[in-house]
Length: 125
Image 1 (cartoon, rainbow, N blue to C red):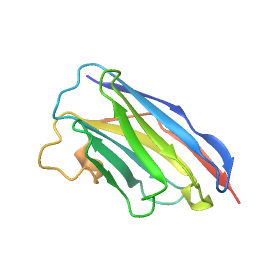
Image 2 (image 1 turned 180 degrees about the horizontal axis):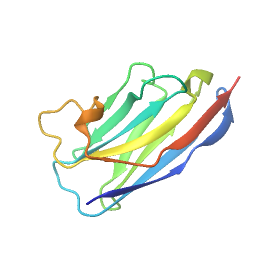
Image 3 (image 1 turned 180 degrees about the vertical axis):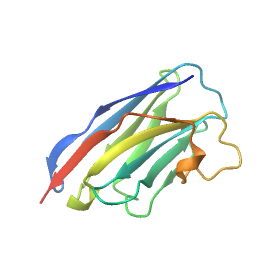
Image 4 (image 1 turned 90 degrees about the vertical axis):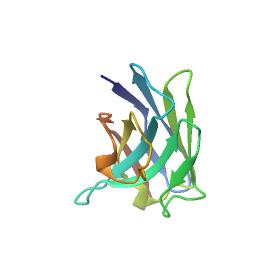
Protein backbone atom coordinates (compact mmCIF):
# COMPACT_ATOMS: atom_id res chain seq x y z
CA UNK A 1 0.00 0.00 0.00
CA UNK A 2 1.22 3.48 -0.89
CA UNK A 3 0.14 6.65 0.85
CA UNK A 4 0.61 10.09 -0.67
CA UNK A 5 1.08 13.16 1.53
CA UNK A 6 0.73 16.51 -0.18
CA UNK A 7 2.09 19.87 0.95
CA UNK A 8 2.33 23.35 -0.48
CA UNK A 9 -0.35 25.32 -2.23
CA UNK A 10 -2.10 28.42 -0.94
CA UNK A 11 -3.08 31.77 -2.38
CA UNK A 12 -1.13 33.96 -4.78
CA UNK A 13 -1.73 36.82 -7.17
CA UNK A 14 -1.71 36.29 -10.91
CA UNK A 15 1.82 36.00 -12.23
CA UNK A 16 3.09 34.52 -9.01
CA UNK A 17 4.54 31.11 -8.24
CA UNK A 18 3.77 28.19 -5.96
CA UNK A 19 5.33 24.79 -5.40
CA UNK A 20 3.50 21.62 -4.51
CA UNK A 21 5.10 18.51 -3.04
CA UNK A 22 3.86 14.96 -2.77
CA UNK A 23 5.71 12.38 -0.70
CA UNK A 24 4.96 8.71 -1.23
CA UNK A 25 5.31 6.20 1.56
CA UNK A 26 5.85 2.54 0.77
CA UNK A 27 7.84 0.79 -1.90
CA UNK A 28 7.98 2.10 -5.46
CA UNK A 29 9.44 0.51 -8.57
CA UNK A 30 11.30 1.54 -11.68
CA UNK A 31 8.03 1.13 -13.61
CA UNK A 32 6.18 3.61 -11.42
CA UNK A 33 4.98 7.07 -12.29
CA UNK A 34 3.44 10.00 -10.50
CA UNK A 35 1.18 12.73 -11.71
CA UNK A 36 -0.76 15.84 -10.81
CA UNK A 37 -4.41 16.53 -11.54
CA UNK A 38 -6.64 19.44 -10.61
CA UNK A 39 -10.31 20.05 -10.11
CA UNK A 40 -11.93 23.46 -10.29
CA UNK A 41 -15.38 24.11 -8.78
CA UNK A 42 -18.09 22.62 -10.95
CA UNK A 43 -15.61 20.97 -13.29
CA UNK A 44 -14.21 17.50 -13.75
CA UNK A 45 -10.79 16.54 -12.48
CA UNK A 46 -8.25 17.12 -15.23
CA UNK A 47 -4.71 16.08 -16.00
CA UNK A 48 -1.92 18.57 -15.31
CA UNK A 49 1.43 16.78 -15.53
CA UNK A 50 3.08 13.40 -15.05
CA UNK A 51 6.56 12.00 -14.67
CA UNK A 52 7.90 8.49 -15.02
CA UNK A 53 10.67 6.88 -12.98
CA UNK A 54 12.94 7.62 -15.96
CA UNK A 55 11.99 11.30 -15.51
CA UNK A 56 10.20 11.48 -18.84
CA UNK A 57 7.46 14.07 -18.44
CA UNK A 58 4.11 14.94 -19.95
CA UNK A 59 2.10 18.13 -19.57
CA UNK A 60 -1.35 19.40 -20.35
CA UNK A 61 -1.29 22.05 -23.05
CA UNK A 62 -2.74 24.61 -20.63
CA UNK A 63 0.32 24.47 -18.36
CA UNK A 64 3.17 23.84 -20.79
CA UNK A 65 5.96 26.35 -20.34
CA UNK A 66 4.62 27.48 -16.96
CA UNK A 67 4.59 24.35 -14.79
CA UNK A 68 7.45 21.94 -14.18
CA UNK A 69 7.09 18.48 -12.69
CA UNK A 70 10.11 16.81 -11.14
CA UNK A 71 10.80 13.90 -8.82
CA UNK A 72 13.34 12.77 -6.28
CA UNK A 73 13.35 8.99 -6.56
CA UNK A 74 15.48 8.53 -3.47
CA UNK A 75 12.96 10.50 -1.43
CA UNK A 76 9.89 9.11 -3.25
CA UNK A 77 8.72 12.68 -3.74
CA UNK A 78 7.28 14.51 -6.72
CA UNK A 79 7.13 18.28 -7.07
CA UNK A 80 5.07 20.65 -9.18
CA UNK A 81 6.62 24.08 -9.66
CA UNK A 82 3.95 26.46 -10.90
CA UNK A 83 5.06 29.78 -12.39
CA UNK A 84 3.17 32.57 -14.15
CA UNK A 85 0.00 31.47 -12.42
CA UNK A 86 -3.35 32.56 -13.83
CA UNK A 87 -6.77 32.82 -12.17
CA UNK A 88 -7.89 29.85 -14.27
CA UNK A 89 -5.29 27.72 -12.47
CA UNK A 90 -7.40 28.00 -9.32
CA UNK A 91 -8.37 24.48 -8.27
CA UNK A 92 -7.77 21.70 -5.82
CA UNK A 93 -4.62 19.91 -6.91
CA UNK A 94 -4.22 16.17 -6.40
CA UNK A 95 -1.11 14.05 -6.75
CA UNK A 96 -1.41 10.46 -7.88
CA UNK A 97 0.81 7.41 -8.24
CA UNK A 98 0.75 4.27 -10.32
CA UNK A 99 2.81 1.15 -9.62
CA UNK A 100 3.25 0.02 -13.20
CA UNK A 101 3.19 2.80 -15.77
CA UNK A 102 4.08 0.65 -18.76
CA UNK A 103 1.84 1.15 -21.80
CA UNK A 104 -0.37 3.84 -20.27
CA UNK A 105 -0.62 7.50 -21.14
CA UNK A 106 -0.71 8.80 -17.55
CA UNK A 107 -3.32 11.37 -18.58
CA UNK A 108 -6.41 9.52 -17.37
CA UNK A 109 -7.76 9.25 -13.83
CA UNK A 110 -8.03 5.49 -14.21
CA UNK A 111 -4.31 5.16 -14.92
CA UNK A 112 -3.49 5.71 -11.24
CA UNK A 113 -3.63 3.43 -8.21
CA UNK A 114 -3.24 5.94 -5.38
CA UNK A 115 -4.31 9.53 -4.71
CA UNK A 116 -3.29 12.30 -2.37
CA UNK A 117 -5.71 14.26 -0.22
CA UNK A 118 -5.70 17.37 -2.39
CA UNK A 119 -4.49 20.88 -1.74
CA UNK A 120 -6.10 24.20 -2.63
CA UNK A 121 -4.41 26.61 -5.03
CA UNK A 122 -6.08 30.01 -5.41
CA UNK A 123 -4.87 32.60 -7.91
CA UNK A 124 -6.38 36.07 -7.70
CA UNK A 125 -6.41 38.61 -10.49
